[in-house]
Image 1 (cartoon, rainbow, N blue to C red):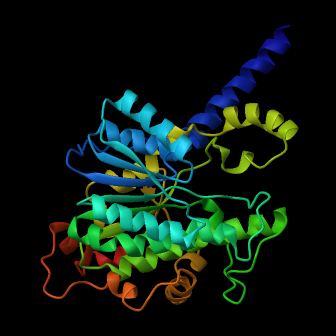
Image 2 (cartoon, helix red, strand yellow; image 1 turned 90 degrees about the vertical axis):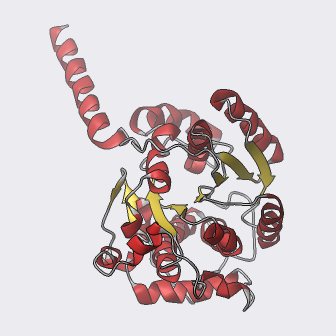
Length: 347
């Protein structure tokens, strides 16, 4: 019995060490209030997105949940309003797999919302499920859709500056290898899906890097945020029922809660003083170095140009990222373009 108790104690102690060193999320400590601010959170009806939207609503922001499912989106609006006491939470339809839906959302948003302070790209997929498309669905949802949406909403972001764009990244970007000759090829089978997911996360990091360069001097800053290992349905939603039942208890033990996963995206959206790190990758509420493939400026520019074609952007729309000549710069824009600080983005 003593040996059993000792073993149980050692197991518990090991778990506590692992939890506090690898699982528990570093909290976002920004005290900033958001009254009068507006945020868009894609995929805000569940998981990390819902927890992010809840925190923004609790701080007083007007929050738009941009979701594919009307039923789930409106249910999340009800939950967030009830828990936050903030009725300025609304649902708007957005399906990132459809470029038409992205354009419809942007048109509706720009016609109804006078400002946009935070654009948080949370929605994403890791598998195509049973859907068969003629394009790379994972890249479309995780990168091309957000790329197009960002372009279409940039005028409102610039007009509301200082404002921020946050893209949900992942440590999986380290395994990504972009093949520009096969960028939009359809994905079949779990091995191709794993590769496509890693590639899409590398695309997220390179997109943010190039976006920061394009937006220098506008007062709009942008960040790639890794939420850490999170117990969400991103990966489990497509596994067989029996395997889901087996993995769910294990996921509860070794993965972060969605609230924990929301901390780094919230840090990137809210923390004051991180403007010089626009274009960088954050994990555990800190800037983290990325591999050479994720800081390749030539690849970032090449991806940008390829993404413009995949998103169907017109020549006029591609000008949205250009700074407006003679436009006033916000204090944050001065910080972001200070030569003494611009070196941070080149690391």
